[in-house]
Image (cartoon, rainbow, N blue to C red; front, side, top):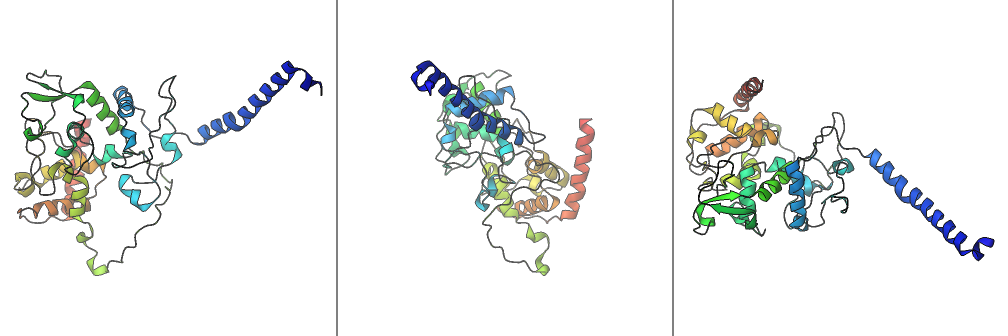
Length: 338
Protein backbone atom coordinates (compact mmCIF):
# COMPACT_ATOMS: atom_id res chain seq x y z
CA UNK A 1 0.00 0.00 0.00
CA UNK A 2 2.28 2.73 -1.31
CA UNK A 3 -0.52 5.27 -0.70
CA UNK A 4 0.30 5.39 3.01
CA UNK A 5 3.88 6.33 2.24
CA UNK A 6 2.93 9.17 -0.10
CA UNK A 7 1.21 11.97 1.78
CA UNK A 8 0.05 13.75 -1.40
CA UNK A 9 -1.66 10.62 -2.70
CA UNK A 10 -3.15 9.97 0.75
CA UNK A 11 -4.67 13.45 1.08
CA UNK A 12 -5.99 13.45 -2.50
CA UNK A 13 -7.59 10.01 -2.05
CA UNK A 14 -9.09 10.98 1.31
CA UNK A 15 -10.40 14.24 -0.19
CA UNK A 16 -11.99 12.47 -3.15
CA UNK A 17 -13.56 9.87 -0.86
CA UNK A 18 -14.94 12.61 1.39
CA UNK A 19 -16.39 14.46 -1.63
CA UNK A 20 -18.01 11.25 -2.92
CA UNK A 21 -19.58 10.47 0.47
CA UNK A 22 -20.83 14.08 0.79
CA UNK A 23 -22.43 13.85 -2.65
CA UNK A 24 -24.12 10.51 -1.88
CA UNK A 25 -25.26 11.22 1.68
CA UNK A 26 -25.99 14.96 1.58
CA UNK A 27 -26.40 16.43 -1.92
CA UNK A 28 -28.34 13.61 -3.63
CA UNK A 29 -30.90 13.22 -0.78
CA UNK A 30 -31.31 17.01 -0.65
CA UNK A 31 -32.16 17.18 -4.36
CA UNK A 32 -34.47 14.18 -4.07
CA UNK A 33 -36.27 15.82 -1.15
CA UNK A 34 -36.56 19.09 -3.07
CA UNK A 35 -38.17 17.46 -6.10
CA UNK A 36 -40.39 15.19 -4.00
CA UNK A 37 -41.88 18.15 -2.10
CA UNK A 38 -42.72 20.85 -4.62
CA UNK A 39 -44.81 23.91 -3.62
CA UNK A 40 -48.55 23.32 -3.72
CA UNK A 41 -50.37 24.53 -6.85
CA UNK A 42 -51.63 28.05 -6.23
CA UNK A 43 -48.83 28.96 -3.83
CA UNK A 44 -48.25 32.70 -4.12
CA UNK A 45 -44.67 34.05 -3.95
CA UNK A 46 -43.96 36.86 -1.51
CA UNK A 47 -44.34 40.38 -2.84
CA UNK A 48 -41.46 42.85 -2.57
CA UNK A 49 -42.92 44.42 0.57
CA UNK A 50 -43.61 41.02 2.11
CA UNK A 51 -39.99 39.93 1.49
CA UNK A 52 -38.73 43.09 3.18
CA UNK A 53 -41.23 42.49 5.99
CA UNK A 54 -39.88 38.99 6.48
CA UNK A 55 -36.41 40.41 7.11
CA UNK A 56 -37.90 42.79 9.69
CA UNK A 57 -39.75 39.83 11.26
CA UNK A 58 -36.39 38.04 11.57
CA UNK A 59 -34.54 41.12 12.83
CA UNK A 60 -37.14 41.80 15.54
CA UNK A 61 -36.93 38.21 16.78
CA UNK A 62 -40.62 37.46 16.27
CA UNK A 63 -39.83 33.76 15.82
CA UNK A 64 -38.89 33.64 19.51
CA UNK A 65 -42.58 33.87 20.46
CA UNK A 66 -44.49 32.84 17.33
CA UNK A 67 -44.31 29.56 15.42
CA UNK A 68 -45.43 28.86 11.87
CA UNK A 69 -46.25 25.18 11.95
CA UNK A 70 -49.59 23.45 12.48
CA UNK A 71 -48.96 20.09 14.09
CA UNK A 72 -51.33 17.19 13.50
CA UNK A 73 -52.86 17.42 16.99
CA UNK A 74 -56.38 18.67 17.70
CA UNK A 75 -55.19 21.62 19.79
CA UNK A 76 -53.48 23.09 16.69
CA UNK A 77 -56.66 23.05 14.60
CA UNK A 78 -57.41 26.65 15.62
CA UNK A 79 -54.32 27.79 13.71
CA UNK A 80 -55.11 26.22 10.33
CA UNK A 81 -57.59 24.13 8.38
CA UNK A 82 -55.12 21.25 8.14
CA UNK A 83 -51.76 20.12 9.59
CA UNK A 84 -48.64 21.55 7.96
CA UNK A 85 -46.72 19.56 5.36
CA UNK A 86 -43.33 19.74 3.64
CA UNK A 87 -44.81 21.41 0.55
CA UNK A 88 -45.84 24.40 2.66
CA UNK A 89 -42.17 25.30 3.07
CA UNK A 90 -40.87 24.14 -0.32
CA UNK A 91 -40.72 27.56 -1.96
CA UNK A 92 -38.68 29.16 0.83
CA UNK A 93 -35.23 30.06 -0.51
CA UNK A 94 -32.10 31.45 1.06
CA UNK A 95 -32.50 34.75 2.85
CA UNK A 96 -29.46 36.01 0.97
CA UNK A 97 -26.27 34.61 -0.55
CA UNK A 98 -24.65 34.94 2.88
CA UNK A 99 -27.64 33.80 4.96
CA UNK A 100 -29.19 30.37 5.16
CA UNK A 101 -32.86 29.58 4.55
CA UNK A 102 -35.15 31.02 7.24
CA UNK A 103 -38.26 28.82 7.51
CA UNK A 104 -39.29 30.50 10.78
CA UNK A 105 -41.21 27.41 11.92
CA UNK A 106 -40.30 28.26 15.51
CA UNK A 107 -40.11 26.14 18.64
CA UNK A 108 -42.17 28.12 21.17
CA UNK A 109 -45.63 29.63 21.35
CA UNK A 110 -45.58 32.46 23.81
CA UNK A 111 -47.91 34.03 21.26
CA UNK A 112 -50.24 32.22 18.83
CA UNK A 113 -49.08 30.38 15.72
CA UNK A 114 -49.10 32.58 12.60
CA UNK A 115 -49.49 29.92 9.89
CA UNK A 116 -52.88 31.12 8.62
CA UNK A 117 -53.05 34.52 10.32
CA UNK A 118 -53.52 36.23 6.94
CA UNK A 119 -56.98 34.63 6.89
CA UNK A 120 -57.69 34.57 10.62
CA UNK A 121 -56.90 38.25 11.13
CA UNK A 122 -56.82 39.91 7.73
CA UNK A 123 -57.41 43.47 8.94
CA UNK A 124 -54.46 45.70 8.06
CA UNK A 125 -55.64 48.32 10.56
CA UNK A 126 -55.93 45.77 13.37
CA UNK A 127 -52.41 44.48 12.73
CA UNK A 128 -50.96 48.01 12.70
CA UNK A 129 -52.69 48.80 15.99
CA UNK A 130 -51.43 45.52 17.40
CA UNK A 131 -47.85 46.40 16.48
CA UNK A 132 -48.02 49.89 17.96
CA UNK A 133 -49.74 48.87 21.20
CA UNK A 134 -50.85 45.22 21.54
CA UNK A 135 -52.94 46.00 24.64
CA UNK A 136 -55.16 48.27 22.55
CA UNK A 137 -56.74 45.25 20.85
CA UNK A 138 -55.82 42.35 23.17
CA UNK A 139 -55.95 43.45 26.80
CA UNK A 140 -54.17 40.36 28.10
CA UNK A 141 -51.32 40.52 25.56
CA UNK A 142 -47.73 40.37 26.83
CA UNK A 143 -46.28 41.21 23.41
CA UNK A 144 -43.93 44.23 23.43
CA UNK A 145 -44.99 47.32 21.50
CA UNK A 146 -43.06 48.27 18.36
CA UNK A 147 -43.59 52.03 18.53
CA UNK A 148 -40.38 52.78 16.61
CA UNK A 149 -42.16 51.51 13.50
CA UNK A 150 -44.52 54.50 13.72
CA UNK A 151 -44.34 58.27 13.99
CA UNK A 152 -46.61 61.17 14.94
CA UNK A 153 -47.27 63.79 12.27
CA UNK A 154 -49.16 67.04 12.65
CA UNK A 155 -49.80 67.19 8.91
CA UNK A 156 -49.70 63.73 7.29
CA UNK A 157 -49.31 63.62 3.53
CA UNK A 158 -51.93 62.05 1.28
CA UNK A 159 -49.74 58.96 0.86
CA UNK A 160 -49.29 58.39 4.60
CA UNK A 161 -51.13 55.47 6.20
CA UNK A 162 -52.85 56.83 9.31
CA UNK A 163 -53.50 54.32 12.09
CA UNK A 164 -56.87 54.65 13.82
CA UNK A 165 -55.52 54.39 17.36
CA UNK A 166 -57.76 55.34 20.32
CA UNK A 167 -56.53 58.54 22.00
CA UNK A 168 -55.97 56.80 25.35
CA UNK A 169 -53.01 54.89 23.85
CA UNK A 170 -51.31 57.97 22.37
CA UNK A 171 -50.33 59.44 25.75
CA UNK A 172 -51.57 62.89 24.82
CA UNK A 173 -49.33 63.20 21.76
CA UNK A 174 -50.55 65.73 19.21
CA UNK A 175 -51.07 64.85 15.57
CA UNK A 176 -51.88 61.67 13.70
CA UNK A 177 -50.22 58.29 14.17
CA UNK A 178 -48.58 57.27 10.88
CA UNK A 179 -47.13 53.87 10.01
CA UNK A 180 -43.55 53.93 8.72
CA UNK A 181 -42.54 51.93 5.68
CA UNK A 182 -41.09 49.20 7.93
CA UNK A 183 -44.42 48.75 9.75
CA UNK A 184 -46.30 48.40 6.47
CA UNK A 185 -43.77 45.89 5.18
CA UNK A 186 -43.97 43.82 8.36
CA UNK A 187 -47.77 43.77 8.16
CA UNK A 188 -47.54 42.83 4.46
CA UNK A 189 -45.51 39.78 5.47
CA UNK A 190 -47.90 38.87 8.29
CA UNK A 191 -50.91 39.11 5.97
CA UNK A 192 -49.14 36.91 3.39
CA UNK A 193 -49.12 34.00 5.83
CA UNK A 194 -51.98 31.86 4.52
CA UNK A 195 -52.36 28.12 4.13
CA UNK A 196 -52.58 27.14 0.47
CA UNK A 197 -55.63 24.92 -0.18
CA UNK A 198 -54.81 21.34 -1.17
CA UNK A 199 -55.56 20.24 -4.75
CA UNK A 200 -58.99 18.71 -5.30
CA UNK A 201 -58.99 15.07 -4.25
CA UNK A 202 -55.99 15.38 -1.93
CA UNK A 203 -56.82 14.24 1.59
CA UNK A 204 -55.01 16.18 4.34
CA UNK A 205 -53.43 14.51 7.33
CA UNK A 206 -55.90 14.06 10.17
CA UNK A 207 -55.72 15.88 13.49
CA UNK A 208 -55.01 13.45 16.32
CA UNK A 209 -56.30 13.24 19.89
CA UNK A 210 -59.68 14.71 19.07
CA UNK A 211 -61.97 15.59 21.94
CA UNK A 212 -64.92 13.31 22.38
CA UNK A 213 -68.12 15.05 21.34
CA UNK A 214 -71.50 13.76 22.47
CA UNK A 215 -73.98 12.85 19.76
CA UNK A 216 -76.61 15.55 19.19
CA UNK A 217 -80.21 14.25 19.17
CA UNK A 218 -81.82 14.53 15.75
CA UNK A 219 -84.60 16.67 17.28
CA UNK A 220 -82.01 19.39 17.96
CA UNK A 221 -80.25 19.31 14.62
CA UNK A 222 -81.49 22.72 13.48
CA UNK A 223 -79.92 26.15 13.08
CA UNK A 224 -78.80 26.07 16.72
CA UNK A 225 -76.04 23.59 15.88
CA UNK A 226 -73.89 26.57 14.81
CA UNK A 227 -72.74 28.52 17.86
CA UNK A 228 -72.97 32.20 16.94
CA UNK A 229 -71.24 33.29 20.15
CA UNK A 230 -68.28 30.99 19.48
CA UNK A 231 -67.97 32.26 15.90
CA UNK A 232 -68.12 35.86 17.13
CA UNK A 233 -65.43 35.23 19.75
CA UNK A 234 -63.18 33.53 17.19
CA UNK A 235 -63.55 36.07 14.39
CA UNK A 236 -65.02 39.37 15.60
CA UNK A 237 -64.17 39.97 19.25
CA UNK A 238 -60.62 41.26 18.56
CA UNK A 239 -62.08 44.39 16.93
CA UNK A 240 -65.62 44.75 18.24
CA UNK A 241 -64.78 43.47 21.75
CA UNK A 242 -66.62 40.95 23.94
CA UNK A 243 -69.03 43.64 25.16
CA UNK A 244 -69.90 44.70 21.60
CA UNK A 245 -68.76 48.26 22.26
CA UNK A 246 -65.83 48.23 19.80
CA UNK A 247 -62.83 50.53 20.23
CA UNK A 248 -63.50 54.24 20.15
CA UNK A 249 -61.74 55.82 17.19
CA UNK A 250 -60.72 52.43 15.77
CA UNK A 251 -63.55 49.89 15.39
CA UNK A 252 -67.30 50.62 15.56
CA UNK A 253 -69.65 49.33 18.28
CA UNK A 254 -72.21 46.66 17.45
CA UNK A 255 -74.16 47.44 20.59
CA UNK A 256 -77.02 49.65 19.43
CA UNK A 257 -75.69 49.66 15.86
CA UNK A 258 -78.15 50.72 13.18
CA UNK A 259 -76.61 48.15 10.84
CA UNK A 260 -77.04 45.29 13.31
CA UNK A 261 -80.62 46.11 14.31
CA UNK A 262 -81.69 47.75 11.04
CA UNK A 263 -83.75 46.47 8.15
CA UNK A 264 -80.98 46.47 5.51
CA UNK A 265 -80.02 42.81 5.79
CA UNK A 266 -78.19 42.90 2.44
CA UNK A 267 -75.76 45.55 3.76
CA UNK A 268 -75.27 43.57 6.97
CA UNK A 269 -74.39 40.34 5.13
CA UNK A 270 -72.22 42.20 2.62
CA UNK A 271 -70.14 43.71 5.45
CA UNK A 272 -69.64 40.31 7.10
CA UNK A 273 -68.64 38.62 3.85
CA UNK A 274 -66.74 41.39 2.02
CA UNK A 275 -65.68 43.81 4.73
CA UNK A 276 -66.25 47.56 4.90
CA UNK A 277 -64.23 50.73 4.54
CA UNK A 278 -65.48 53.56 6.75
CA UNK A 279 -62.13 55.35 6.62
CA UNK A 280 -63.59 58.67 7.75
CA UNK A 281 -64.60 57.22 11.11
CA UNK A 282 -63.03 53.79 11.66
CA UNK A 283 -60.44 51.34 10.43
CA UNK A 284 -61.06 49.12 7.42
CA UNK A 285 -62.81 45.84 8.14
CA UNK A 286 -61.41 42.82 6.28
CA UNK A 287 -63.56 40.36 4.33
CA UNK A 288 -63.89 38.07 7.34
CA UNK A 289 -66.67 35.89 5.99
CA UNK A 290 -64.98 35.30 2.63
CA UNK A 291 -61.57 34.69 4.21
CA UNK A 292 -63.00 32.14 6.65
CA UNK A 293 -65.35 30.51 4.10
CA UNK A 294 -68.50 31.27 6.09
CA UNK A 295 -71.62 29.39 5.06
CA UNK A 296 -75.16 30.75 5.33
CA UNK A 297 -75.44 28.87 8.65
CA UNK A 298 -72.35 30.66 10.02
CA UNK A 299 -73.54 34.10 8.90
CA UNK A 300 -77.04 33.53 10.25
CA UNK A 301 -75.64 32.37 13.60
CA UNK A 302 -73.39 35.45 13.95
CA UNK A 303 -76.18 37.84 12.97
CA UNK A 304 -78.60 36.25 15.44
CA UNK A 305 -76.02 36.45 18.21
CA UNK A 306 -75.18 40.10 17.50
CA UNK A 307 -78.85 41.06 17.12
CA UNK A 308 -79.73 39.65 20.54
CA UNK A 309 -76.73 40.55 22.69
CA UNK A 310 -75.56 43.59 24.72
CA UNK A 311 -79.10 44.95 24.92
CA UNK A 312 -79.81 44.55 21.19
CA UNK A 313 -83.15 42.98 20.43
CA UNK A 314 -84.29 42.14 16.92
CA UNK A 315 -85.86 39.30 15.00
CA UNK A 316 -83.70 36.32 14.10
CA UNK A 317 -82.83 35.39 10.53
CA UNK A 318 -82.80 31.98 8.88
CA UNK A 319 -80.00 30.38 6.86
CA UNK A 320 -82.39 30.16 3.90
CA UNK A 321 -82.87 33.94 3.62
CA UNK A 322 -79.15 34.53 4.23
CA UNK A 323 -78.33 32.07 1.41
CA UNK A 324 -80.43 34.09 -1.05
CA UNK A 325 -78.65 37.31 -0.05
CA UNK A 326 -75.19 35.70 -0.25
CA UNK A 327 -75.93 34.40 -3.76
CA UNK A 328 -77.16 37.83 -4.85
CA UNK A 329 -74.05 39.54 -3.39
CA UNK A 330 -71.75 37.10 -5.23
CA UNK A 331 -73.47 37.89 -8.53
CA UNK A 332 -73.26 41.65 -7.84
CA UNK A 333 -69.57 41.53 -6.88
CA UNK A 334 -68.76 39.38 -9.94
CA UNK A 335 -70.52 41.88 -12.21
CA UNK A 336 -68.69 44.83 -10.62
CA UNK A 337 -65.31 43.13 -11.15
CA UNK A 338 -65.87 42.58 -14.88
